[in-house]
Image (cartoon, rainbow, N blue to C red; front, top):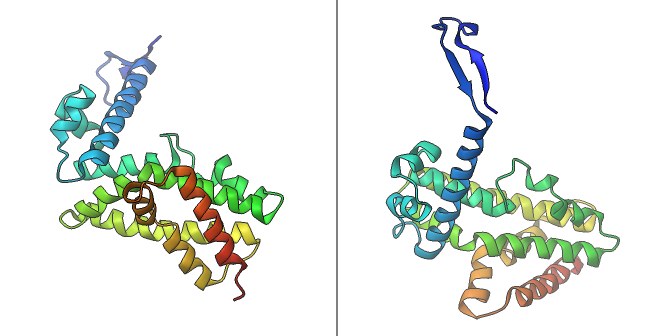
Length: 219
């Protein structure tokens, strides 16, 4: 049930009543989720240039004005779609606080930790690699996406370093981090899965082998 609050409780209020409805907030959240789903699918299928806000609005069955009111711009919408794809949902919980991430550091053996790390990387790449392509396309003409693309690479490198640290239980060698960053990149995933036709499980197994090889090598 909507709660009712006298407007006179607010300085300058007219004395009329205003309504704060949990239902309205729920509807806004549902609209956001529907638009994000449509945007994620279209950006992944068509890229940056091939996807218009009107296309997203039509797919989400909302008005163009609703899309802009919810996200601000096409670039901000793509950024939001990527952020959701990285963690898998729209909950305000950082990746580092999620069980799939903390499992890397709690594995009983190095092999267990490597498998958890490879599984997380494969999952994220599977969800984000086509959106990352759209961002790189848009970054050539849109300043917001140029900043997002640069920040994405910075985040990716830091995440790879953190995963390596969790696996070995210390700060990984910078050279090892360099190699892991390249091997775990979404573009490598795209080449092997989209271009070569590998399954997600084959890629994950390959990545496990690469991580073991890199981290076992004397530095």
